[in-house]
Length: 137
Image 1: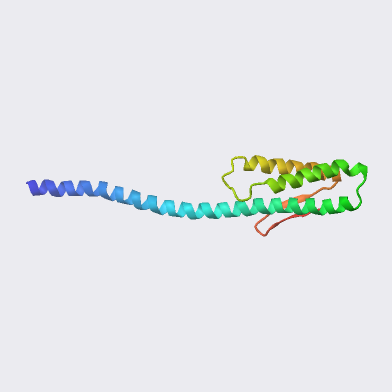
Image 2: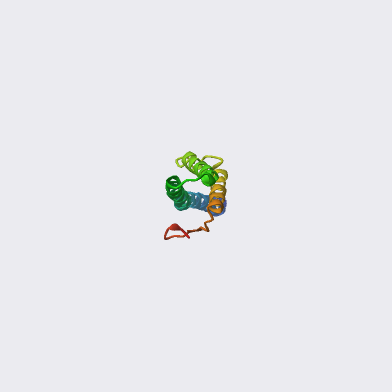
């Protein structure tokens, strides 16, 4: 009779044991896949932000060259906003993804870029896609 009870307990306990083992196997597999997916997502998002900032920087450097060559007093406000944009881009924390104000700084750069486009009377069309990004005028 004691043997029957032990066998019954083994069957009942097997369900709990398999449940626990399955949980831990699933947890380990999910953690591994989560790390891979997180890295892939972070790399893609980082590349998009970097591409966007790079376009703003190229735009700003090109306009700085154009405005310096034929600057008038009327262009002083444009130059001030342009230099502010370049300064913001240069101070952007490219190497610190844990920077807590990353999105706020990016929004400020976008706002300054829009302000500069307005002053220059330029209508940019900034697009980010899987193939790349670009500005078109």
